[in-house]
Amino acid sequence: MKKALIAAASLAAIAAIVPAAAQGQPTAAAAVDTGVYGNLNLGYADGRQANLDVIQGRLGYRFTPYIGVEGEAATGIKSDTDTIAGVDVTTRLRHEFAGYVVGFLPVMPNTDLLARIGYGTTRLKTSVAGISDADSAESWNFGVGAQHMFDAANGLRADYTRQEFNHDAGHADVWTVGYVRKF
Image (cartoon, rainbow, N blue to C red; front, side, top):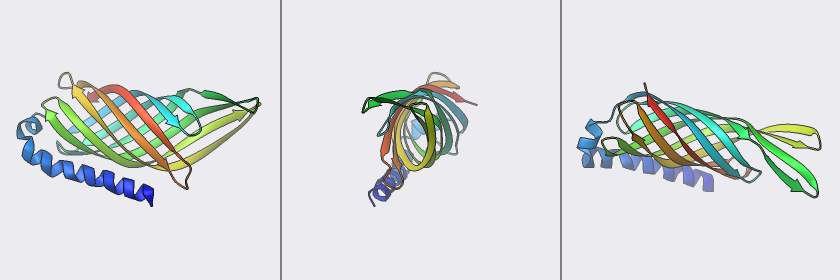
């Protein structure tokens, strides 16, 4: 129930941005391009099982100055090793895939605030004493961020995403910073 309320509140926040932005920011919206964009991000995932460094790629399409969609893929670039009862347990992100609806709020001609909500799957590999196992978990994801474009095609984006895993499997807080490219 808690996850459904959080997801509904995030969707309501995105929906609230659209009318407010349309009336309150006409000059900023006029300078915003629509179309295809991509991100290449470095991130840090703080989860119940492990704290992992990740690299992400995103491909998105901005339909209007206020609404878009994006797909995301990630993999781990550094594993996490913890010692439990004298035994080393190593966890690595094998992959993560997710899809999002994104709400943009142009606050200046080259700067947007954003909110996003989506659904994804994450696969982790755990190794203990030479024995490995991998498991996947699905999650509802929601987050906020900002991006600034330095010119018509290149920019920087920073965001926070919360992953709420299904079946009470915990959560992860993912912080990313990356390069934005408009095509």
